[in-house]
Length: 82
Image (cartoon, rainbow, N blue to C red; front, side, top):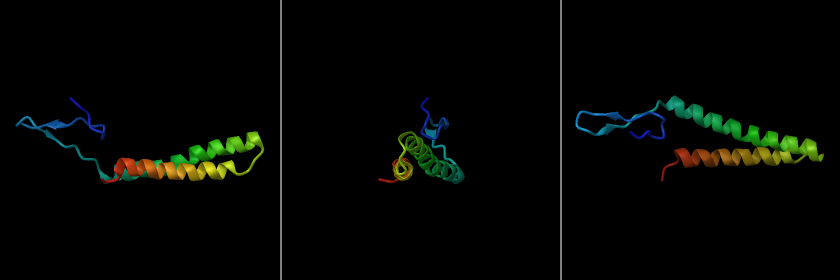
């Protein structure tokens, strides 16, 4: 039995087909919010560490902006429509 990207197994029906398992919209909103927060925090933190190590003061901004861009790209890949 395959598991969809939702993480839930499909539900078999009496005619041998499978029902799609839907997720609440709140789950999607929570996931999107966590993507938007984690990207800048992680890459900004890496930039902050590099700034402290190298004695610079611009890598935290580059890391944060890159984190935002990567977060938006991942959200677009996952939830964007063709």
